[in-house]
Length: 532
Image 1 (cartoon, rainbow, N blue to C red):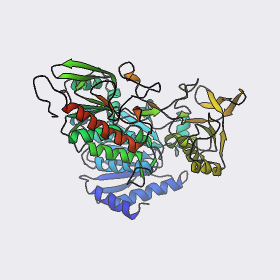
Image 2: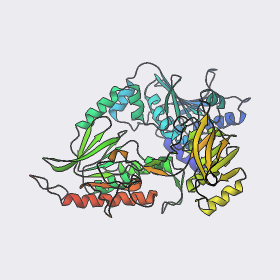
Image 3: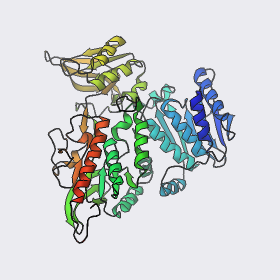
Image 4: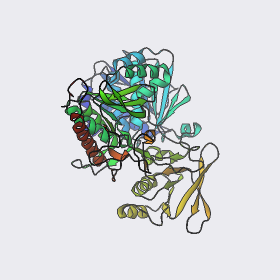
């Protein structure tokens, strides 16, 4: 099951184990013979790579089958994978092995202390698809918690393998997390966000800690490619640098195939994000994750002109200069029924949620590259894909159009303006659109809708404080300067015409150099500016 290269790599990783780890496997040769064989084969191959890994046949009839449970006998902790943890979840399995076997976790000391001190019963379940880019981050966060505290259990569930549960719980988007049988979260969540939901006071504690931070010389808002590049460039200049971000990686974390990143023939979003974060952490950058900026202002203080950034938790950070790199998010249709049925059939990530619609009919809204790529991906899973395009022609590259036509189960409706999403209160069952050629209203019966109509800049919080275009983009010059002195911007949130990862990185570097140039020309009252 594991090729020679992967086995060699895994064997090297398993040398970091300090205590015994058991793999309890529960198999069902009748209902799931293929997957049961795969789990058995995978577990035994892993055990052959380390003397500290043992395979145990699971006898507990209450566990899901097929499944693999990673157990630490010394700590009495367990992490369960219901399904075969391959694809994007193989890394989750490797980390579960290492953390269960005593390898240190990359968490803050106060987070570890908090998790270990939790009392009560916390039974987390995360429904995933193995093609989901966002799911591993959630699975790994909850796995770390389970590895630290025997009161916490976590089970990753492959939704495509346990379809009855998916239907019963009305799961139509992944990752979907349940705690003690009740819905807990949907979509990507960080360990910080999980801890805040468990203990609401955690947010207040975090705000108090942030409020006490000394002023930064450079504060970057956003942790995507532009923000990461800006942080690296400013830290290398010796400036006290901080990053405020809801999550590290931004939109890139949800990107599947990346084949136009120069010098790297092919990679994937999560892998690139991991590399970005690792590179940033090579420098003394204060990464303040799970924080959202809500207000920006320029004030005069004993340090001269400084920028204040107010966060959603009430804390305020100060910096001599700020770089805005908040990126963009998927554009919504803004039609009746869209919000009501979001995660109940309306989705924005075909790679994540597509497997949940296996054998069903779905629609893709948008005929650009992202829309047609989504249709091609989905056509391999679902019964039929209907693409609705507002324009009189598709805007996707011809090679993608040709591929879609060749699929056989993709149809295209042009001049179609989607007007409403319909459902039965629980899930989507159809949509309405206006035929722009004659004004007639028509209906398409579908089980899911994937919206792929471009991006919206994350700049609402800046309205009234900084110059924006009618589309909400931050207006910048060739140095990344905005309408506020000392505030720079980079990446997809700006007027940069091409929204590409490599361009965002260049924008981040450019804004960092522009901001550094700005700082060395400033005079702080009573002292010489450090940047000079």
